[in-house]
Image (cartoon, rainbow, N blue to C red; front, side):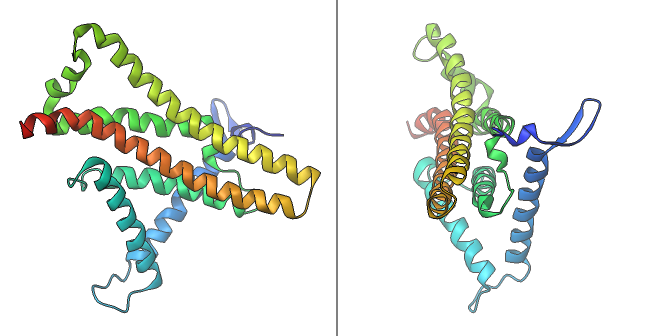
Length: 227
């Protein structure tokens, strides 16, 4: 059984490999762009609204509400990044109902790339909010002795993000594949539906954790501004 879509190479030349992870990643991104175009090509302010616009507005409203609960009222700068993370992971996991599809989130290279995006987004948003010194100051709070622990914490939470998402999607795919070989009728269908649910939960958890990390990095600035 193939553990990751990275193992299936479609084309290779030298150090350049085109595997299923890359193909399905671009397919997911293309599908998101297509859905965004369908939702925004004929926007209306007053009813009747198109079905695509209704779905689009419902998803955006849901994301805005959750980001506001975590970060606060200033959500416009965070919505594009966090929303993109959620939509990519969500679409990647939803498409498992398509035969022969392998979710790119089942590849450690994909989940590591997503985790690295969060890793660099945290200092970016923090520095744009409170400046370079304001961001670096939290590494020596409450004592300079905490500097190694803070640095280690940044790397370990990035590793945790990548491994958690990869492990959840990979294990679900392996269990579904094993059950399909043993009981090829109703139980695998139930497992597939269960996998859809788990995939959406993982997309939500990943986006929420990213929002929490960003909010915690900018929290000291908000506290200083309020005092």
